[in-house]
Amino acid sequence: MRFSGDSDYARWLDAQDPLAGVRAGFCLPPGKIYLDGNSLGLLSQEARLELIETLQVWETLGIEGWTATERDWYFMTERVSRLMAPLVGATEDEVVATGSTTLNLHQLLATLFEPNFDKNAILADSLAFPSDIFAIESHLRLRGLNPETHLKKVDSADGFTLSEEAIIDAMTPEVALAVLPGVLFTSGQLLDMPRLTREAHHKGILIGFDCSHSIGSVPHALSEWGVDFAFWCSYKYLNGGPGAVGGLYLNQRHFDKRPGLAGWFGSNKKHQFEMSHEFKPALGAAALQTGTPPILSLAPLHGSLRVLHQVGIEVIREKSLSLTHYLIELCDEVLAEAGIAIVTPREAHRRGGHIALAHPHAFALCQALRNKGVIADFRPPNLIRIAPVALYNGYQECWQAVQMLKELIETRVFERWIDTTTLVP
Image (cartoon, rainbow, N blue to C red; front, side, top):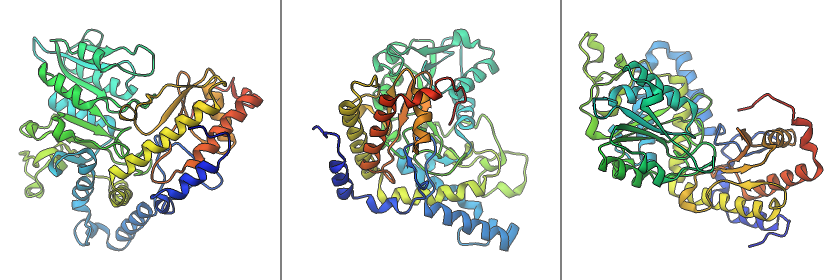
């Protein structure tokens, strides 16, 4: 379908949107088109109210907030975890809201990575988020292994996407564990997690996924697929707020593993206040908690997760795919001759929630877009990421953003930012 440069079709699509009413529950930056929810999701009224209520409890009850309210703080982690579990297709005891993305990966590696003479390498990829690589290298060194020889990275043929065949070929006998992205943070490619899990297990490899760019945007079935572990942040599509508490998944077949990094809040709550020096772990993934949960960070996340459950992840995915499909069609029509290349896979089953556009001056274009009130983001070396979030973005916003991008390229206004070197989130 061709859109002939006007916004009538976008307005019609917005009028048909079953989630149009949900948008009103979010705090949209005034005068801006916000298309950066894959970096930081927006504040919802539910999240705001939950945080305010938690502050009021602290104000009025002090220490008694842990036990003396209907939504006592002591079990807040469990309530948040129960809401997270369906989003990744797991049982409640396989998921815990805790830590951060990197800390949770550290915990999972400390718990599950058990190198021996035959299997002592970790498999990752050349496009992985840097923090994941830093954590993997740390655990190799802690076990006396050299990352240069024991970290295997699958290369990308095009610099933007990964081949599942190449990943499977890299699952060689010495690999003990694999850490891969569910959705690549750069191009937005969605990996075939079920297939990769089957192949890894066939070769005796534990496999886990960084789901930071997929949770809240893409349905998962981690337990059904047999994934060994997963971890994620909560400030992108879960809209939990900057630095929100992350989450992790541990398949129940690993519940017998003692936490690699044990801490007091990983205790079984029946015994936690016995204050014994004997660690009695909680059942399931909850045992992988360490310190006291950050209540003021869990509170808005709890509120935001309620919004996702009211809508439903399948409905969110359907609209997300529709928005990114529309965005791809628009870019093909409007930007085809402007030096812009779409590097996100076009097939619906191979893309997550954002679209990545390649341009030699991507950083300058992102800065120019922000100057015009369109909030997208840049990722090196040459990508503009545009993330229309199903809960609060519409089709006309996508249309306006593409038209603005076209105008900036045609008028060369973006050139004033070419020599700028400050990177932005």
